[in-house]
Amino acid sequence: MSDMMRLVEPLIPSLRRYARALLRDPVDADDLVQDCLERAVSRWHQRRSDGDARTWLYAILHNLAVSQMRRRAQRGAHVTVEDAPEASLSVTPSQDEALRHRDLMAALDALPEEQRSVLLLVTVEGLSYAEAARVLVIPTGTVMSRLSRARDQMVQLMDGADAVERPPLKRPLLRRVK
Image (tube, rainbow, N blue to C red; front, side, top):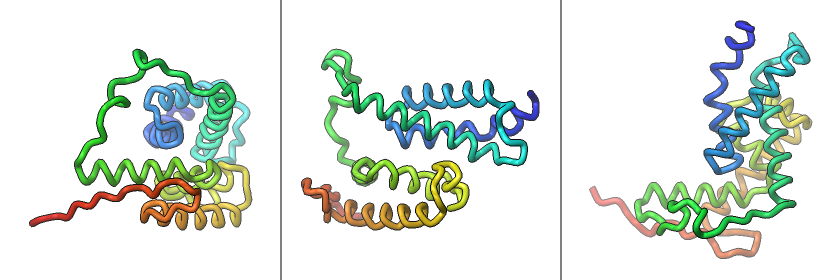
């Protein structure tokens, strides 16, 4: 048990960060991480002793997230105005950093799930191509291909040249004055 805690506990912040990036909802992300940890604890005996606990946990988290997103897509989102968080009904902030963050999140949301997962695992979580390939159960070459396409698409989306036929993302027209 102490061996498991020693391996799992340092990974919890990065699991939360990945879950939040995937789901974009802190409450759902925390629930997802808890489900992931429960599954890891209950199936710790099934883990290969020569395997990496980090990639194993990311694989569990990713698979749970994909299942949850599929269920949501089938069910559809329904939130009444009274139940919606006040922050979601507010006006977009006018600060430069907040606008860039919004554009980045919108561009990230516009990516297909396969590209978004690879991009997050490699660039945000710092996994190697091989580790990301093991998490997603795909060949390393596919990871590199998806990552390249995701990076190209992010550049296009951030620059406003969107190939998905939607209005270009508005980049802030502010300049810095020193």
